[in-house]
Image 1 (cartoon, rainbow, N blue to C red):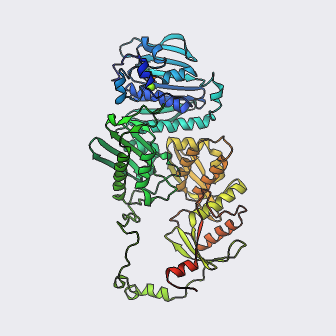
Image 2 (cartoon, helix red, strand yellow):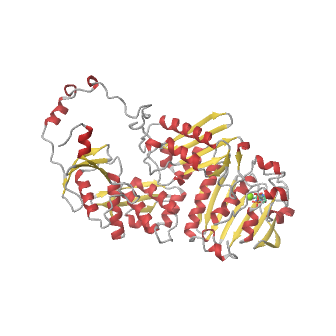
Image 3 (cartoon, rainbow, N blue to C red):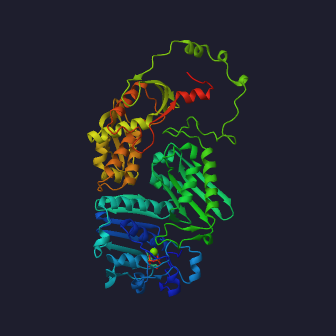
Length: 591
Ligand code: ADP
Ligand code: MG
C-alpha cells in the first residue's frame, strides 16, 4: 500500500495483463459503488473516509478521503478502463497487496453516471478536478480542498434505464450501503468510516486498533457482553483472529458472520461453514453465528483474480484453512461459559460439555452407580409419593385425539400423551406458529405497555432499520421511543394470549428485519416479515411456560385453517412417537 504522501503514477495495463484479469460487472447498485470507492481510499492510505448519500445513493454518492491523492495530470487516466497505479507487471497478479488492481472500477462507474473526481496531492497548491458524463470527460476545474480525494457519483444508471430498474427504493439501498460500510470497516478497523445522508450523520465508525472494538461498534453492546475472542496461529503462515458471539446470540441467516482475508472483506462458503460446524451442537440447525473473523495467510496462497468484485477469492488448500478455523473457533467456544447475564456475570455453564468422544450410545452405568431413592432428600421422596396434579388437557379435534400434558423437558419441549402416542411439542415453534397466524389474520399483534421501560443503545444499522421499517415494527406490538442519540426506550412489547414478549428481543428483531432489507417489494416479503415478527414475539426455548399457556397455543394451532404443524420457517412443531415404538424399546410386545 502506498503511503499517503506518495501517490504512484497511473499506467495503462498492457493487453496481455488485461486478458488475464477476471472480467465482469462491478457496479450493480449504490452499495457496490461505495465498496469500490472506499476500497480505493483504503488503497490510497486514507485514515478517515466519509460517505455522503442523497436519495439512498440513487441521486448522489460522494466518498471523501484523506489519502495520497491523484496527481492532476493523471485524473483522466483514473477514469480510463484498465489504467491503474497498483499493478505494474503481469507477475504482480500472483501476490496482490492492494484491494484494487484491475483499473476498472472508476471507469465502470463513470460510464453509468455523472461523476466528479477531485483530488489534491501533498504539496500541490489546490485540488484539481474533472467532470465526466457517461464516461466522457467534459470539463476540468480547480477547487480548494485538503490533500486527499473526493469522488461524487450522481444519477447512477441515468443512461442505462434497464439497469436502473433493478434498483430498490432509496431506503432499502441506503440500508445496503450501511451494511457494506460495516463489512469494509470490519475488514479494516484502522480506517474510520462515516456515513451521512440528507438529514445528517447516519453512522460513524471511528478508526480503532482492535477487531473487538470494531465489532462492538457494528454489532452493539449486547454482542460485546456475549462475545468471546479467538486468536490462533495454527500453522506456518496462518493467523486467525475473531470476535464471535456465544450461542445465546444468533441469527436466522449467515449474513451476520463477517470474514476478511488479508484485510479484504470476502465471502466464502467453506469458511463460513467451518464456523457453523464449530458451533454445531450449541446452535439449532436453523441458526447462524454472529461476529467477525480476520484471517491472514501468505498472499501467494490467495488468488483474488477470480471474481470481478473480488468478493470471492481462491485460496490454496482452503480445506485445511477451514479445518484450522473450525478447530480454533471450537476451542475458544468451549473455553467460554455459555450464559452471561446483561451485567456480564457468568451464569450456568450448561450445555458446554464436549460431546462424548467415541461410541454414539455409551454403555449404561452399572446399577450400583444409579442414585437410590433413599439417598435423595426426604422431601423429594415425599413429592414422588404424593398425588400427582391433574394434567392440563386439550380436547380432541378431528385431526388428533385429546392431549394431556405430562411436563416440560429441558425448558424447550413439552411431553404430552395423545391417545396411543407420545407427542413432543417445541414450545417456541408452537408459539411462533400461533403468533404468525394471528398476525397474518389481524395484521398486527396486541401489545402491552411496560411499567418499567427498557433502554437499548442501537447500532447505526439497527437505528436505520427502525426508521425504515417503522410500519412493520408498529404491527409487531413493539413500541420504541427515541431517547437521544441511538438510544431507544421500549415502552410496549407484543403480547399474545396474556404472555408478553421479552423487550430484549427487540434489537435482534431489527437485525433480522435489516437482512430482509427491502420494505417495498411486496410479494413474499410481507409474509417473511411477519415470520420474523412472530419469531421475536414468541416464547423462547429456555422460557418457563405453563401447561395452560401451551394448551391455549395448541388450541390456536388447531383453529389454523392452513393446519400446518410446522413453524413459519418450516421446522416441525410436534413430533409423534407411537406408544408401540416405546413398548418395543422396553421389549414389551403390547400394552
Ligand atoms: P484500481 O483500484 O483497480 O486501480 P480504479 O478504477 O478503482 O482501479 O482506480 C483507478 C486508479 O485511480 C487507481 O489505480 C488509483 O491510482 C487512482 N485512484 C482511484 N481512487 C483513488 C483515491 N481515492 N485516492 C487515490 N487514488 C485513487
Ligand atoms: Mg479500485
